[in-house]
Amino acid sequence: MAYKETFWMACDSTEQLRAEYGPFQSRNEAEQEARKLGFGYLLRYEHIIGENDEIQEVRCIFLELAPSTAPPRVNRRLHTRCATCGESAAHDEAWRAEVWADIHEFEHARHRVRLFEQTRAEGLREIGDWRDTCA
Ligand SMILES: [Zn+2]
Image (cartoon, rainbow, N blue to C red; front, side, top):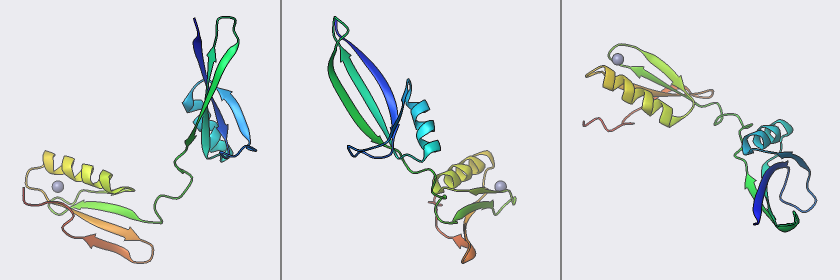
């Protein structure tokens, strides 16, 4: 019976002459190490091992890591503030602001959450009509 052995490497490119670091048993470990080293890729190796423990086949798959070292979208920060009770929060991503507003408006009937965008250049600016308020 052939079986498959899988392991992960962190690597800095998909070129033939690349730096690789590893191996790691799990993708998470490899990813953490790659981020520490500033590497942008993971390499997943699959060895198909035959009856006599010989490697019959090697497969490798590159995975590109999403850049996480980049600053969250150029100094833009979203602020939600309830126009009714004044509760507020800050968010890095639009969907988080929306979730916050959904939860707040769900928990407090007839409260209305407003959204503001803060950039270093322009300061705080309200984003009107950001949600469907017909409901
Ligand atoms: Zn409120």
